[in-house]
Each structure stands twice: as C-alpha cells, then as structure tokens.
Image 1 (spheres, rainbow, N blue to C red):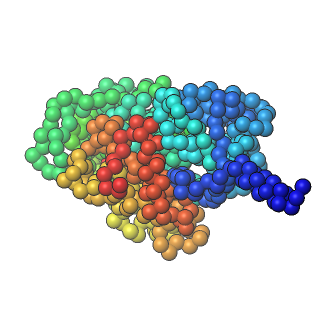
Image 2 (tube, rainbow, N blue to C red):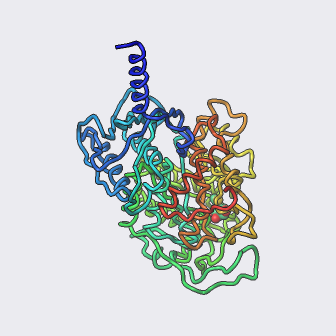
Image 3 (cartoon, helix red, strand yellow):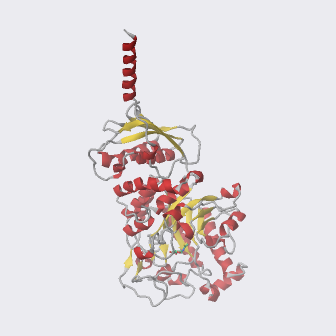
Amino acid sequence: MSKINLLVLLLLGTFLWQCQQPEPVNPDSVAIIPQPTEIQTGNGYFTLSPKTAIVFNSKDEEVASVAAYLQEVLQPATGFTLDTRSSGRRNVIQLVIDKSIVGNLGVYKLQSSPAKVEISAPDATGLFYGVQTLRQLLPVEIEQPTVQSGISWDIPSVTVFDEPRFQYRGLHLDVARHFFPVSFIKKYIDLLAFHKMNKFHWHLTDDQGWRIEIKSYPLLGEIAAVRNGTLIGHGGRPPFEYDNIPYGGYYTHDEIREIVKYAEARYITVIPEIDFPGHTIGVLAAYPNLGCTGGPYEVAKRWGVFDDVLCAGNEEVFTFLENVFLEVMDLFPSEYIHVGGDECPKTRWKACPKCQARMKTENLHDEDELQSWFMHRIEKFLNNHDRKIIGWDEITEGGLSPTATVMYWRGWMKDVPYEVAEKGNFMIMTPSSHLYLDHYQNDPEEEPMAICCFSDLENVYSYEPIPEGFTPEQEKLVLGAQANLWTEYMKTSEHVEYMAYPRAVALAEVVWTDKSLKNYDDFVRRLMVHLKRLDGMNVNYFDKEFR
Ligand code: TNX
C-alpha cells in the first residue's frame, strides 16, 4: 500500500472514530436545584428505554423502597415500568450502598455514562437524593403526569458528588387559619422531597381552628375546629367585617398516620406543632375551664393575638396538655415536637388569682418567668417520653431550658441568635425578614392581598443562616433554616403554592448548597428550566418578576 493510501485510510479511520465518540455535554444544559457540591460533565448520554433496569441489592429493604420510588416517578411520563433486578451491567440504573462515601447525612454520588447510571451513597437517604438529581437530569417532560411521546429520555454524562450543608431543611404550613386537604399536604411533601428538603413543620392549632383529632377531647373537633365566620379584607384594626360562614375541619388519626408514612417514604420528618399557652382561644371555646376567666369564649374569626390564653395556675390545663401530647406522640414519631410558645399576652395571668398563686409557690418573679415555668413543665413531660421540644423564640424570655431548640422568627430582634448561642442552645432560623413566605413577593398593586411586607425571590436566596461573627463552635448550633407559610390570607391550596413557589426553591438552595457555590444569576438560569418541571407537577407558582 502506498504511503498516500495509508494516510487516507488513517484519516478516514480517525474521522469514523470521532463520529462514534459521544459529544461533550454542554454544562449549561444541566440545571439542578439545589446546586450540587461538585458536578463535572462528560461525553454522551444515557438513554432510558423500556429495557432499562433498576439494579440494586434487594435484600436491603430501604434500598428496595428507593428503587420502587424511582420506578414510580419515571413511569407516568415515559410509560415504562422499569424492571428491578439484582444484577446487570449495561442499560441499568444502579443503586449502590457504599459505606466508604463520607459526608453529611444525605451525601451521594451519581455517575452517568452512555452505558449506565450509578447512584451510590452510604445509606438510603443519600440514594433518595441521588434519585432527585437523576429526575432533574432528565428532559423536563419527565414530570408530566401522562405519557409523553417523541421524547428521547436522555441523561447527560455527569459525575456528581453532593451533600447537604444543613441537617434541618424545612418548610412550614399553617393549616389552622385555613385548612387544606390531605391530597394537597401530600403534594406539598412531594415538592419538598423534590428539592431535597427534609422537615415539614405542621402548624396544627391556633386561635382560629384546632386541626388534629384528639380522641380524649372530642370537643376540640366539634367546637375548637370550627369558627363561625371569617374576617373579610385585611384585618389591621376595627371595625371588623365577617362573612358569617362557618369554617372548619381537622385531620383524623388515620389521615395523620397516612401523611406521616407518606413523608417518611420521602425522607421527610413531620414535626407537629401544638401551640400554647397563647394562640389557644379555640381550645378555650371548647373547654372554658382551661382559661383564667372561665369565658365565654369564641373561636377567633379574625387574625392577630388574643388576650385569652391557657391558665397557668390551673392543674387541669396540664392534664389536658399531657393527654393531648400523648396522642400527638403516638401519631408522630418525630424526635422533635413543636410547642409554640409565641405571642402569649400576660394580661389575663396578671389579673388571675390562680396564676399569681402559682408564681408565689414556684417563686417566679414575673409573668415571663411563669411562661417559662409553663413551657419547662411540658418540656419535662415530653423529655420523659424521649422527645425534644422546639419553641418559637419567645421561649428565650424568662429562662431558657438547656435542651430546648429555639426557632428564631422575630427577624427584627437581631440579638436573639447571639443570646441563644451564648447559652449553647440549638436554633433553627426562620426570620420574618427573609423566610416569611406570607409576605409580598412583588408590587402589592399587582398581587393578591397578603399580610404585609416584602420578600422577593432574591431576598430569600440571599439569606445566610449563620449569623455574622459566629465562631465555628457556635455555627454548629444552627441546625438549619425553614420558611413559614402563615395562611391568614391564603384561602386555597393554589394560593399557598403561589406564595411558596418559587421562593421555596430558593430556600432549598440556601439550606443545601455550600455558601461559596451560591450565585443568584446562575440560580435564575437553572430556575427557568426548573419551572418547566414544576409545570409538569401542576404547581401554581408565581412567575412575574424574575423572568
Ligand atoms: C406571627 S411567627 C405569628 C403567626 C402569624 C404570623 C403572620 C409566629 C410565631 N407567630 O401567628 O400568623 O406572624 O406573619
């Protein structure tokens, strides 16, 4: 063969070889939220087909349920019910427990190539988060509820190492001011899981409605759960106008168990909140003997803070709370129980002979100390049942117990986190300045009525949970952060979603992604893709200002 021919052959060979080489993945085509710790793009794509199998060691039950979950989320849009097997090397998604991977709980690795996808983690929690990343590597149509034709289900070749920054990644929902169906609660939980969040703080009781069945106190369901009307318009000051339509509802034990189980399968802990001694006028309407004056009381029809609270001098109040918490603990396996403690006016206690007598016998100097004594007493009861309490930051007033976790909400009280750190207590950050998703996210003129204030997507995104000047030791006291959805002005599930999303997406990145990797412009770029996924899930998100 002549030299020329050889050269031609060589060139042709190289050309053909290059044609077969998978093309490099464009990093900008990948849009994962929250941004992973490390991600490198490779060459080519893995394509899901009806023959792709999910491979895992079936002896591990937890891994088997992650595999079943993966199978379930991929099914509707692709129409493929992927086979699950214990071995296979090509055209597989492999779930592997690998104890040599170290990192914060939730750490995982994901490696995809044209031949296979491998998700590995030291435990099933990590595998579950790897699955969420896998969902976000697929075309956005994957989240559609019905079969999508003509889509090539390609997963770009990537190598991901990822772990969460904080262990507490929460979203709250107030179901007392307005009540939402079980189906919506499940959707809310699904969305949390999709964003690698792991705590659902369920605000179940308040002045305007008691929303959890308590078998030993049936009047809570009959009376405390129903108000005789709701305020019309914005409720700053009188005169108040009501719609006079009875409004009520509560979750039964069966429904609660169903939700807790649903959340558990998505690596989410449901933290119930039973708010006391304030925000309890509904309880008093049902059981007037638990108040200082004996009533009469009415379940609140408007929003705000009410003077009538549980009486701190009456032993029946403690019997009541203990019995309530026995049922609550039976329903919720969460180590943490939220006991409220916020906004408790001391007006009634100051005028109540029983409360004053209690202060004398317990040697308490003022009503703040009386509240603190009240909270400690219930805390001890819960501790004796192996539970820990979380309370709103008012529990720091009048003496904070060393084992209580403080939920910091009063964003304007800048010293609170420093005081909590000084005492060495754990804290969860939910400051009203950034993480109150009941606040306006856009010009109020263009928005449905909200409670007040302003916190747009960028403000939420910019939140840094570690207060300035915290020492490395103090940093460890910050378990994480949470956004709150108080629903005074949200009557429907659609409206809750509108207020929650996409601001909760920004929160997800605040609590998961390392601070050094945060970048608002890049977040918005990824969000534009992400919103299409939320479309598939039929999420009624706000989408005006950041586009
Ligand atoms: C304060 S945050 C409250 C809630 C309200 C909320 C409205 C907290 C512990 N208490 O009762 O719904 O403001 O933003």
